[in-house]
Image (cartoon, rainbow, N blue to C red):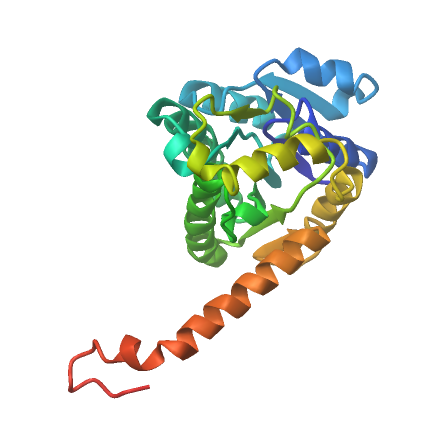
Length: 281
């Protein structure tokens, strides 16, 4: 039995992960801005569930939530940073206020929770941090530039975090879903920037229209995704990255081929910038 600490657990992936973890006999501290929504969604969890109010951008609330977890269960084994905010629009269309709001939740909110919970994991010399990223954290696409930038940032600090925590017995995984049939594309989760620039109609505009068309018809099954995420918390050697969905796998494979091709095409120019006394590759 493990103790899970999950942010953004009132709906979507967070709620489904909490439900799956509970179904497998684990104890769960589930957090959301309004924890009463979690209790309504998981009415039969009993004493194995502690629901806590948490705005991930509030350091005091994060510390209090971690304290509630250790008070209730004595430890934390798995941390799932799932709380997030979306925005859709061309990079130029996104206002400064909106960009900062998305970074505040997706980047700084995750860092705030990590700062609150990592002292517990370090003291234990054990634990598993699972940060919910996106295929958009590895592959850029029109309309998702600012949202993707927050996930690119998460990819960067999480990859480094995995190296820093490995000697302490703490594992780290990035989860990179593609399109899944959650409410992410609903207005309640995703902000579509009000400014529309006609020049981007065939790029970001097309993505905006596609988001409406595929909403609740995405290829990914979120219940299967939640099960896969709980699966990796139960193995002794989990991956640093877990791609979820055929669209995520295909998109990342294409990106890797593109990067490899660019390296080979421009290899001579790339290595020509070293000092002459550096041995060539």
